[in-house]
Image 1 (tube, rainbow, N blue to C red):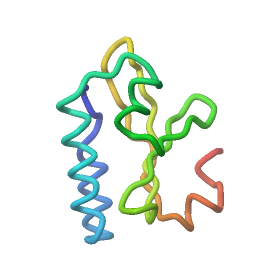
Image 2: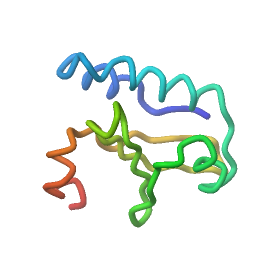
Image 3: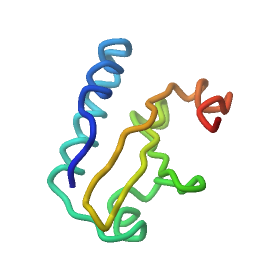
Image 4: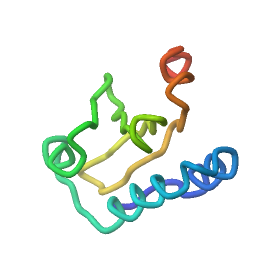
Length: 95
């Protein structure tokens, strides 16, 4: 799958250095895999949740949330937000 964009990951881990390892693992798994559906994705990421049109991943032992738009038919993942658990819980990303 093609992740757009790695730059968002780098910017987040520069701000929260302890997230780097978990984000790199997430990135590596996704770029080396092919998922045809949300069910395929859940086989690898069982904690991934669908929130309307977006997919929410738990990162770093539930410390962070990565919110993405995934186009399974095109093999593309668009990173929309990467948030701390607290920022995610406030819900501002839904607007």
